[in-house]
Length: 303
Image 1 (spheres, rainbow, N blue to C red):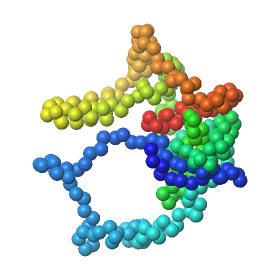
Image 2: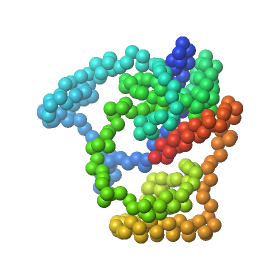
Image 3: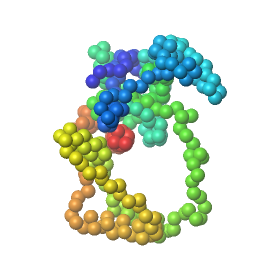
Image 4: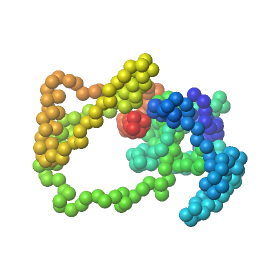
């Protein structure tokens, strides 16, 4: 991996030089626009809508629309000059429990790696976070944008997870959500829903989930490379709206049938091999928090 950022963690009066690496990667099947007739790439050109002519990159600025069709034009250098002065530090402000932060705030994850001179203070902070079961809330500037972030233990290192600012989280008040007695479930329906959830309860194992669409696309591409033809697959029919009680009863019957067939539910993946020596010496309460932290990380990566 190649680091995307170099700087330092400011932890009280302690400075810890570190490198930042992207912890996740997109594995979508990427397509280019091509001419169907001859397979040649489609080239996109930049045209000025006013003069109707192609323009070069050095003629292009950044425009902020203040009114319809009216822009405040700025150069790239002007925008970069507004970046925070502390653009190469991770400034820790508070230490909180991970359960206090709703997952909706999390944006992207980055691995941290200490430089040679930062190894000891890096491990000190990691060990302290691990044993207290807390995460650090910090500010960091990445690619000219200042971000809120958390710093927490992840396996044998620490992970920096950038977060959305509070005003970037949309309000549910914008949704037309049902309310009143007509929308409230009946007690019997709620009991059956609870029973269904309990019958399907298991442990989260990310290896149980695969991107089937990506796999199907790659198989199709391989077949077309070999000159094979593949008939178009029909889409599944739209689900029919059925009586809620009937749907719950059918779902519960199916869950019971799977349970009686002898199939085992997926087990939670063992994390004992990944725990550090400090993890093994932590209290049960700290271990529980770390488990919650890792599970949320895996949920976000799978999503």
